[in-house]
Length: 313
Image (cartoon, rainbow, N blue to C red; front, top):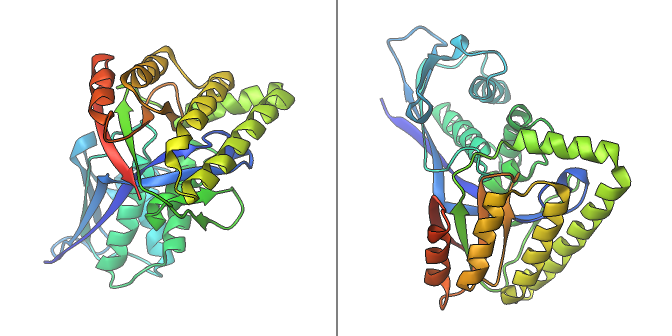
C-alpha cells in the first residue's frame, strides 16, 4: 500500500506574543529546519473505520476510539474526516514524527495537526485550501492552549511570514532583506495554556495596566514590520530588547530565559527576547555572519540545551 506523507514546519514569534491574544498585531515566521511529519498508510486487513495512531516520541500506540473524545489527535482526525465529507475513514495507520521540541513555543501541536490534516486529505485523494487547513488546526489549538491567538496554525499552514491581528484578514509579510536568528532552547517546558491563563488572570485584575503594556507591544510590532519590509533588519535588535522588557512586566519571563538573553547580548547579538508563551521554551537572538558563532558559543556556555539558526527570507 502506498504511504501518504505530509510535513509542516515549526514557527517562531518575532514580536507580539501575549498581546496578540488581546487584539494587537504579531509577526511570526516559519522555521523550516524543524518539521512535523504525518505518514498515512492503508490497513486493508483492519475493520472499516479503524484508525491507529502511532507516535513513538510520546510512546503512543492506540486506536482512535481508545483516545479521550477531546484528545487533540483524535479531534484533528475527526474534524478532517468531517471536512472531507467522510462518514468514516478507510482503515489506516497514522504515524507521527517530529523534530520540533514540545512545549517550547515553536508550534509543535499546530504543526502535527497541519501535517495530519494534509496527509489524511491526500489519503482520501483530496486537497484542502491553506485557509481550511488553518481553520481546522485552530479548532485543535483550542484544546492545546485554551484561548489561542491563531498565530501558530496560521503561519504553519501558510508556510510564510505573516503579520497577524486576531479577527482580521491575514497579511503576508514581505521580507525586504533576509536576516538570521539563533534560537536557543532553555530546556524548560513552556506550557502556553498556563501562561496565557495567568496573563488573562492578571489582565482581569488590572486591565488598565495590561492594556497599556499590550499597546506598547503592538506599537513595537508595527515598527518592526516597517523595518522588515524596508530591508533594515539590523535595526530590529533594539525593538527586540524593548519587547523583552515589556514581556518581563507582563510576567512571562524567568531567570533562566533572562540568563540566556543576557548571554546572547554578551556574545554580540544585536537584540534578544523570549519567543512564545514564556517561563521556559526558547529565546531568539538577532545575529549576523560576523557574530553568529560567538553568540552560539555564549548561549551554550550559559546552559542552552540546543542552539540552531534560521534565516528569515
